[in-house]
Length: 457
Image 1 (spheres, one colour):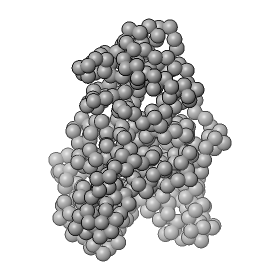
Image 2: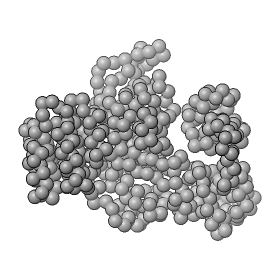
Image 3: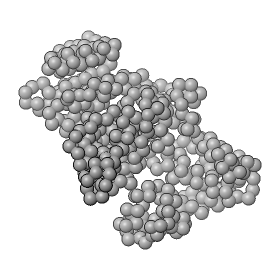
Image 4: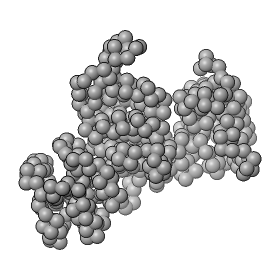
């Protein structure tokens, strides 16, 4: 049973009709007392709560009722309906345990997607499905994993994929966030539409609007032709916003609007366009900490993380390392025509105990280098060890400078120079080794005045 709480009869009627058309059992309340009475008598599976119950539009009545709801039922999903200029209040509501917030006038499709997703997730929990069961339900061929934490994550990803809910994928560099995003799209109803990847860390502030929303000819000095933006390219499909934690404050505001109401304006044009998209974001940064420091908008965080998938680092799922190594080796045998290559049990056991700060990306680098360099057809510990010691990650327990001997900035400069030297000043290779994008590395090179060859890549 879904409970709608709103003092406006027009809103209650609209929501009742919308949800009943989708075969949901729905009940409505006009006041807080009426809502609490219904909750005491009925088993409520989801609540849609308006924040304003008076002309003053302060939202305090709704916030007080949210606290009472959470005291009665800490688990029931709550969607806040916000009007006027109440986004800040909605964010406060999210802190008190609301699951989503929707602006008035709302988009019917978005509201229904949020309702379906939150109801589906009510059935989550318990022991995760086996890999065999997951493969029967979903297509996760590109994801190599049998660790319990990963299977649980894949199960949630599979169920969420069927909806259009916004998803935030977090995790360290090299854990496979883009692969998860692609898998969500591939298992969604939009699988036959575009999957547009955008590296937000590689887009400068001055070009953000043009890249994301497009521009018309003459919009600025170098705009010689019309350009379609990434959001328009992703219409009816999925847009993957990678490295969203690298977005500057001004661009965050511009992004928030299109994520809230799915509308935008092409640069140089006053005509508003509407897009139908699924949004998936990823970051290796702690956005909650960034919100506390004031470097990431709190309302944007709540807009993008209806569902959060946190990918574990490889050291927390080391039972998957042999599977990943076997998969990588099988591909490399074909790629480099070394079909006789095999790996000793001792080497596999040694690889499992590595901390691998670069995660899957670093593991792939070590395995590929070993396959290329080793003359033996059977790779042993020494083959892998030599490649590990030759990488920018010097050893299993890297020797860090003593506290006080170098500042964090000086340490970063030192690592960048070492990576460039090791990779013969190839920017792309050095960036991967450091867990950065090319654009992010270029910014640091300019910031620290480190000389580099602009034609090296």
